[in-house]
Length: 348
Image 1 (tube, rainbow, N blue to C red):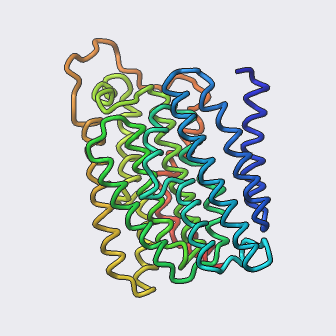
Image 2: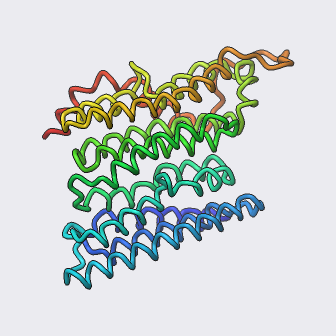
């Protein structure tokens, strides 16, 4: 793939997401989602590997199904209410169909089964786009839908937290672990979405920062399985020190950045009188924390069977990913002290 073609596809990806961001009409939002989907398909299959082609085909079929349901639901809403405004979608039938279509697009449980398989067939650089950027446009539509006291969103959120934690327990492939991690984190965002949209957006942004740093770390070290983490300490001690902090930030352990979003979400759920729901969410997070801690132990406390005799490089080699990794890792680890500032921004 030439540089011009690659730049054009990235530009189309940005245009599609931006179009969905700024649109209040269902057809324009649907058009933006389709542009984003069609733009990422060549990026997914650019290496022509059989697994990449299979993942691209699965992703296309899933996204086409979700787009068809979304278009049918928005047309039904226009037929019932007489308008195409996203924020005025209040009839139960199209609202339920729209919620399920968007849940299928971003991979919420129980409509999640495509995401681990698709992400496993992609390289790290394309997988990070699928796990982060492609969540923005459907989530922007979620924030515009009026769903007061929706039991459906609470059910999807709790199911995603538990299935995301349970599904990652027996995984040894890092891309599948990150896919189930994405499902669990999206469950937290959907859980609080109807009560505090700024808080849900904050959780999404923090998830994107930490996930991007983790994907970039794996991409620089070219590790794709837990077995490859055993030898990481002898290859690069600096990244071996940094990686467990990123994983524990994904596990939402204090005092790391990932703890910030979970703390504020639990506070909001308790404020809304949903203490049992908050307790279920915490129990589901314990499942996710287990496989994050397992990966951290495999990275730092486990030695490879045959260690290398070469001198460990204490200075990172120059790479175009070094600076983005440094910046994203800093935010992914040390953002918790800025909690008062972030709360002031949210309440402004």
